[in-house]
Structure formats: structure tokens, C-alpha cells
Length: 142
View 1 (tube, rainbow, N blue to C red):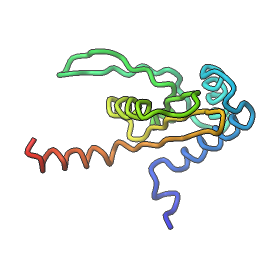
View 2 (cartoon, rainbow, N blue to C red):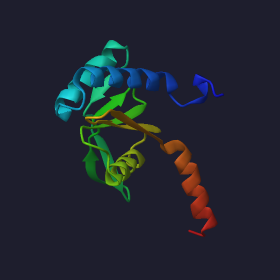
View 3 (spheres, helix red, strand yellow):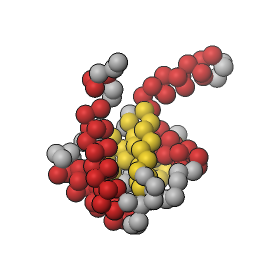
View 4 (cartoon, rainbow, N blue to C red):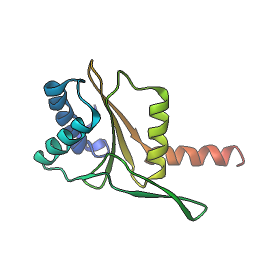
């Protein structure tokens, strides 16, 4: 069995999961994203995490800035969070989140959905994917 230290940022992840669980117990999936967003910031700060709301991240193409991505939250300057309040997450939501994470410098991202049934936490680690993508490119001759 793996230990907490074996997972990237697992201590922070446990705190985030706990905060999300408490918020869902209080609000369920009945409120707009803006309310859940504010409640999550309070819950995370109360648990000792540093929360940056709506941090602007420049996006570049071919060395030139082409836009700005604004994630919902950055936690302890290491974890990117995107929030949703939907019936369920779509494949498109997950793909879009993956592209957001790839465009940033963060290794770990959470797509968190406060649905009417439960809170869903979709965790992605981009660090390992970079190695895999590099392997695919080399083996495909690209």
C-alpha cells in the first residue's frame, strides 16, 4: 500500500477533499458556482492553505502571448483548481481542463464539480503525461 508521501501534494489534496466535502454537506449542488467558489476559498484558508483566486496566466504560442487563462483557484502556488456546478461533468469539460493544465506550469490540477448528487473531484497530473507524450513523439518519428 502506498504512503501519503508517495502521491504528489497528497497532504494538500486531503485538505482540499475535506473542504469540498464540508461545503457539499452544507450546500449540496443547489447553489451557483460563484457561491461555491467563495465558500471553498474560505474553507481552504481556514484549513491553512494559501488561496489565489482568479490568478491570470499568460498563454503563449510560438513565443508570443496569445491570451490569458484565468483558473478559479491556485492553491499553495502548486495546485490548479477549476470549479463546476453541473448535473455531471462532460467529456468536453475534462478535455478543456486537461488543455488548461497543459497550458500552465502546474503539475497537478483538480476539476471539482458540485453536482446535486455528490461532489466529484477529477485529479490530473501533467508531469507524468509530459514524459509519456515525449516518449510517443520520439517513437512516432515526430
